[in-house]
Length: 96
Image 1 (tube, rainbow, N blue to C red):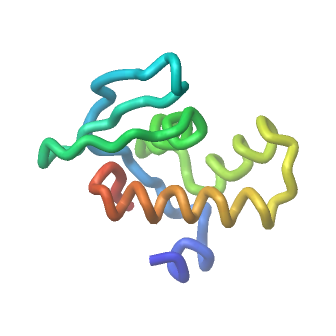
Image 2 (image 1 turned 60 degrees about the horizontal axis):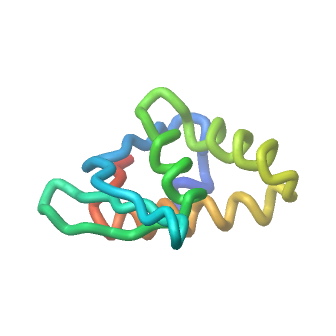
């Protein structure tokens, strides 16, 4: 999947699956539940990327947004976004 993503990020439009079901304010984490009922605890950045994956934003749009918000270099952001999306995919919280 990662190879496919790297080849053409402008045509891939990820879409989030499942729903937000809670928040732990003390730990600053969010709970997401997939369609199987499994719950994942995620950090705010992961939640923001999950929400940005709405079927309208391309992977390129999401990378650009993340670069602007974090002020980090593209290579760094691409790796982080790809790693996060791979993990969300494994947990059935995103699809491509």
